[in-house]
Length: 302
Image (cartoon, rainbow, N blue to C red; front, top):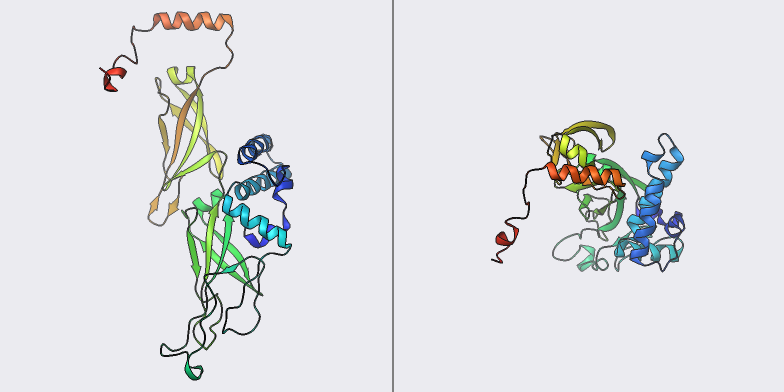
């Protein structure tokens, strides 16, 4: 979401927190709300999906110190920030979301010809826009308002958080007949509660049971923006092994990333007496092996 829209949404109210909420408390609230409103728990519920997006959007801004500072400033102004005219420029130009790079325009040169260097280039304009994680992987098109004009900005697949994109000729006009400046957009990527980025690959952690790790199994693994896929877990799969799904990462022309599903063995939190007895019997039947037999030696302490 571009910052010009920040004035319309109260992120503190969406998360139900005070404006002086600490970073730790903010994270706790977000995790609780994201879990309760996750689309997987409310299939087909458009309101729940919208609520989840609002929660993720609010946390993404408030958890970033710089974005939170900017958001608070814009909300305090009640209408956003303005483009400021630099010295030597003429006419009015304002917008509710952007700031100028650097200072003002240089003054015109001798006799209005722009000095020895000729007509001066207009000032660049800067803004930021926040996109969903899936849009950073698959690409999207943003609509950004610059004054009375709406500018389309194509965001390529695989864009990184903090990367800047430029729209040529959509900045401030020159004060003396030179070319217009550019619009520079800093892209912020929302965090995802399940998926993460690893270069052109997308990662996801998939819990499996102890029995599935030992005996093998076929499990469902989520895909980003698609139906889950079935993957086979081989017997004897260790914790941390990555299962690869080809072509389900970043899609670039001539190059595509993969989905890497890392298995995480889930240890039961409650085991009854019968289960304990079976586990003890199982342990007794295993070969007499110590998985830590050479750990001290490899650590260089012997």
